[in-house]
Length: 476
Image 1 (cartoon, rainbow, N blue to C red):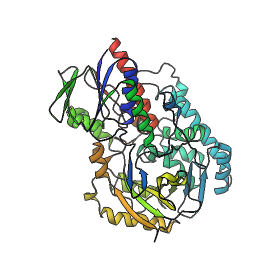
Image 2: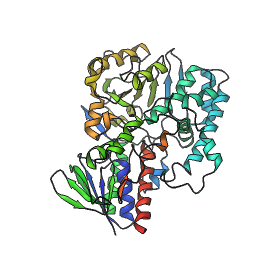
Image 3: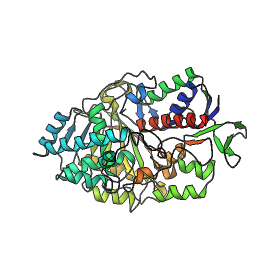
Image 4: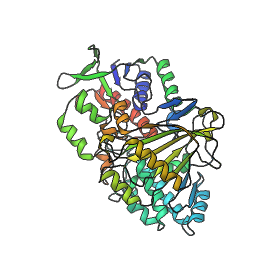
């Protein structure tokens, strides 16, 4: 039996802790905040509840395999897209129905969407038994040359989309999948286009009470498995003898011995603070940061007719928007706005006769003090843009609370408030991210900044990969 310490109670850390406890190891988890779940968090005010992290669950089987029993609700639409010209595209799970909606938006493009979806399905199948199956350092046992070709190596997401679509609105729709990894469609690898296969194959699901209930369910399993959880316990150092880990030091000064340390932290925080390593920190910096988020959490009076659980209101110029984020390093002047309203399917999330709107804008990972305008001024700009594109909340807003990149940096130790660590910039970007084995024996990384990446199912897969690596290395 090994002594295992997990630093951070995000989903990746919770999954690795659960699996290793199930294998008979003594596992202790230290979380500096007052609850588990990491970015799977919520904000409450005046009877409103807002999910400030993920709001839909994809690949639910990843969590069912862990023993989670969740009540799941499937929204009537995956997403409602609204374009700058006022046209709309309702995304449905059923591929045939989705193709019909695409044809309604742009006659003749439905068959192209079906071809795009088939490419996504092939890409996802290749990724499942290669990239998602294990660490980057382990050659996949079932890899074939056709798997490599299936992910369109050397092509960007935007370049791939142009193989299938001519309508600029559909290029925006396809390019949006880069934002799932905090990246630009003009730089991100084409492999991110496998996401439609996930959404239209296994669906996107809501958990009554909000997705933070997934963290609650995992916490219950940790307790049953005997994992020792300490909340409000900050780890300040990873202790080593130069070759292997020996434990951690807490903010209280207390030392805790361990054979295995799993860092469920931002990789930059690990190598910048917990275990300083300038070479690895420079390598992470060379990736560039993913985007951050500017969140408006609004209590809205009344009910909006026809509002979807998920909506995306696109900018008029996607290229300019991403140049603002990644080149000019400023909040976009004309932003795309994601709107989430769980009250559509869950009345418990807002008082009767009201709605909880989460409005998210992708912004650079840098402090708002370096923006050309204040967060409050940018809030007003976002609301004005929404009003001009069919979502006028004038006279209906009870309050708007803001979360900025500075808040995300403070909460999660993320470099500049980056949501996904390094950006997916370039066709080989997924293979340049920090791996799951650290530079000392017994040290492992899990979470959105490490392989295989961010998002609920991927960090859960990362937790499983790390647990398998620990077992493999202990056997040696």
